[in-house]
Amino acid sequence: MLHAGQVSSASLIHITPLPMSTLRLALLVISLLVTPATLAQVTVEASSGLLAARIAEEIVPGDYERLLQGLRDNPGRYKRKIVLLDSIGGSAPEAIRMGRLLRETGFETLVPSDGLCQGSCIYLLAAGKKRTINGHVALRRPPFNAGDSALAQAIHGRQAFNPASYFREMGVDARLAQDIYRLAPGKLRLLNKADLTRYRLD
Image (cartoon, rainbow, N blue to C red; front, side):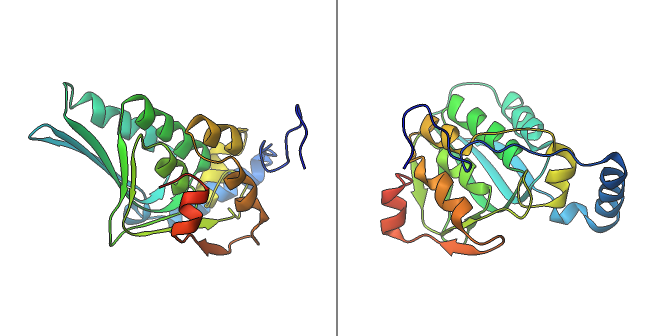
């Protein structure tokens, strides 16, 4: 049990920098193996008073800027702002930055019936001022300190982030952060309706 002033190891993630030789090798492998189809698809479109964003595939460094540019390209007032999520996760620091942007700009989050939000996607889901989950949500302990992919580790390996603090900021139960890091590395845990209610994600 944590006492006032204490921070659990799952709350504050300290990332050990990669040696430069390892970093160069990782970037080389990524450039050879990662195709554009595997990277996140971030789109923003406006129609009839609705601003709709979609974030799919893997969350990668640079997606925050793509989301921000999409919002800047569609200024004005909207009756509703909704982001559709269908993501396998990716960079946790990038997802947290995107989540704060979504919250600041007043977006609802939606996992459609044919969608999946797993791994670092949970940070995007948590950002919604209203959350609707028709598809599947799964926790996944990331295999890398910076998230679910080698690309995230290579680019964001020097950053520190605090999942528990972020969840509290979004009105989500901070125990979610601890439960993520209690899982075996790479193991998925599908959340049911009771889990979503307990974590205040619904």
